[in-house]
Image 1 (cartoon, one colour):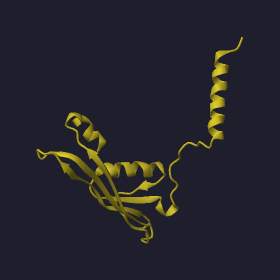
Image 2 (cartoon, one colour; image 1 turned 180 degrees about the horizontal axis):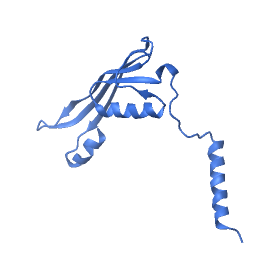
Image 3 (cartoon, one colour; image 1 turned 90 degrees about the horizontal axis):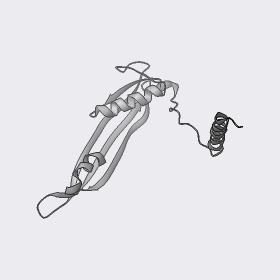
Image 4 (tube, rainbow, N blue to C red; image 1 turned 90 degrees about the vertical axis):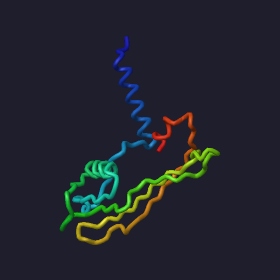
Length: 142
């Protein structure tokens, strides 16, 4: 009689071999250059972005410093903003379609004070249709 655990282990081992054979690998944290191992975050606006960046950098082995200085790299984000724009209005001056925009600009100054990544701009937008009967989903979509 077969042992039930042996069958389960064989199934798990087979699954692991199939995943390894298809090229699947667990995701690892980003490996940053040694000059970026001590970093100061200078983020304008949204503190949620700063918290998420801080978490990602710590997972990558970066030591976050409360202020910049010699031997400390700086990730500067001077622009971090959401905006909305009405696209179409109904006959009763109600918005029926709108666009959400997210703008971010960033630059990285290395530990030696040299500009490693010049100011970059990222703009993302998405259009939404507003349906008065589906108000609950609107905030979640944004």
